[in-house]
Image: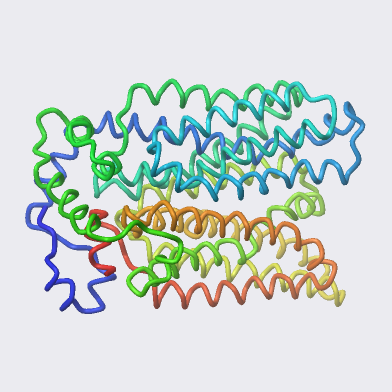
Length: 474
């Protein structure tokens, strides 16, 4: 696939940033990509075991609260610490994930995260008090912090262009599936048994990594030429002609090799600053539009509507899987930008409906309509989040950063996401005590700003190779 030369990039109109490149040989390229889809799908399946583990870890604390508190005699404050230390561990994992992925490779990093997560689950299983529970929870958090970066990056780097969006969305589907399984299984087994089930996806990932190649782009970056050629051929099929894709990756790396070794300060250079603003900005809007706070409050909303919290959680997890599966089907046709715009608009509507319901309740107006508005608003909000802002920022992050800064930039973006998650989760109760409808009105304002941000800055990346995306952004 012919790569745009520097003059094309320099003379390209601003519209070129938002439209995919179409090639007359695209059909031929796609047929080559289809030559060995089994290996690409197997690689994706193995990688998203880390995503499934992500969902299992997040969902663990909900069905186990009563059992843990009764058996270990924990107070509400101690259990709250147990729940929140996962995010602290994820923040620690996000700091080191980029460097680890660059040094030991994408496969090595996924294996490392799985081993750490298994250690965390074992400590939780054997725990006799709050301290060991927190240590185990921190380690599982560290593992999912690493996976939240390395899994989408690995999938983006091994996937054919025409399937990249769909297979990257599987990352989010697996998170939602892990969450659903944790809720469902946790309703029937003890908290110690549920901790043992958390190790299963980690074990599947460790075993599966022995049967798949590492990212060809990473292998090329570290100078493993023979392994690079073998991995690319294995991913595309024994009979596929990979010469064009191989040349494109090498041409991109030749340019990058003339640049000095990247540091954090390099992210703020003019050539990288727009990429950083896009990556960080999407994560800011993903978190500060209030999703984690809404999830925190969801059980109380379901209870007020007469729905048992466990049933409500399972229904919500099912909604996630349905909407995310729909997104996986349409993302490579509809594009990233339209889905992000629809997502932010739907979240705006959901936030406004929820704010209106709380306002009616506060002023004792149309009291019969309040709970209905709340549930409709929350479901619209959650469904819209899953369609776009929940997963697409991770897709865009994995696509826009060049290899030489991907590790540093990815760590920063992941840290912003987990840091924002912690801030929203920590402050949500205080904000609701301050002013419930004001809180959701504030979330609505963030959604409005997100729509403007996406419209003005976020490029369309569907239909392009990673090298084309990065060249067009320079």
